[in-house]
Each structure stands twice: as structure tokens, then as C-alpha cells.
Length: 245
Image 1 (cartoon, rainbow, N blue to C red):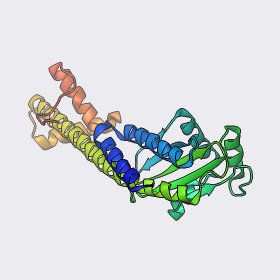
Image 2 (cartoon, one colour):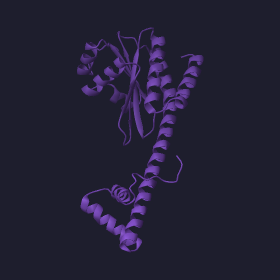
Image 3 (cartoon, rainbow, N blue to C red):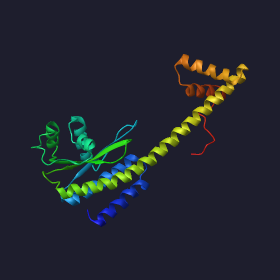
Image 4 (tube, helix red, strand yellow):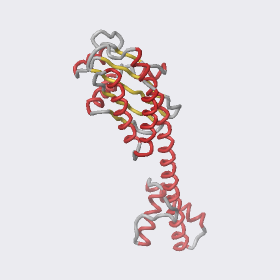
């Protein structure tokens, strides 16, 4: 990868961070650019896919095409694919020829059936809260030379930096959403307690204990019960808070 290519990759990937609406959008753009970069390096059509795993979040799958996502899915269904070795070692894993590779026989047989004959898995460095591997798929054998693998590693390094930034932004947005939900829940519970206090002429702690007992008896979440009480008394649906988004 030339200095010009390196600068272009940095600019494009960081622009993706600011121009895409979510993680999936970023990953779609990243894999498309990764595939184009490797296609240029190998002079063969290369597909790229990635599956991002985050702590306590569902996996996010993206690819340069539907075929790339299909090929990535083959690895996940077979279970014996090089992605795990790439994550474990932190280094690229190469299948030069799926017809002769002895390590992942069932995986290679499945790939060959879909016209893929060479694979390169390059891990991304995302820290302890997430993991992902760029999986490159080629229609011919022995296409990923030592020079191409080095280019893929450089690209992965740039992509890792951009994706870490994207993940931090996404985490901040999720935290804001969680805090907003918590405030709305707390507001509903406080209002419901106020209504119980007025109806039963009791102090706040007794009203809250009553709310908890009914919640437990009904096997209903506290804030859901509170919203129900508010709706029944006021005739309105879900309440909001006075906090701006």
C-alpha cells in the first residue's frame, strides 16, 4: 500500500464515521472499501465480509456484497473456519487453496461449492469489548501473496482505529438512550406514587411499597404498572420527561 493509498484509506474510513447513521452502515462502507482495496492489490475480484461481536449486544454482519455475506455465513455454520485462529493469535490466517488445505476440510469443501478458492482472515484490534475479523474471499487459488497480506494488515490497522471511534460513538448514544429510559421510568413511578398517595391519603414510602406489592403480585415490571396507573387516572398514554434529547 503506497503512502497515497494509506492517506486515502485513513480519510475515507474516518469520513465513514461521520457520514453513516449506525454501526451497520459503517461496516457496509468499510467492507466495500476493503474489497476494492484488495481487488486492486490482487488484480482479481475480492469479496470482503465482517461479523462484529460486542459485549452484551447482538452480532452485526456486513459485507461488500450478498455473496460476501453468504460466504461469511458458511464459516459460521461450519464452525471450523480460520476466523477463530485469527482472533486467537492476532495474526492473519491464510487458506491458499481450499482443495488442498488440511486444517478446515469441511469449511473448505463448502467454500469450493460456492466458487471460492482462497481465503484470508485478518483480525481487527478493537479492545476487550468487541472483536471482528476481515474475511477476504477470492475466486482463484494462491492469490494472497506476502505483499498483499501486508497491505491487508495495514488496511486492518486503519480500519481498527476508525471502528474503535465508531464504537465509542455508538456506546455513548446507547448510554444516552438508557439514561433517558431510566429517567422516564423514574418519572412514571414517582407520578404513580403521587396518585396513590392522593387516593389513599398515605405517605410516599407506603405508596411505593404498595406499588411494589402489586407489581410483584401481577409479575409486572414496576415502571409498566406505573404507566398503567397514570394512563387509567389521567386518560393519557406514555409520559415523557422535561429533558431534551
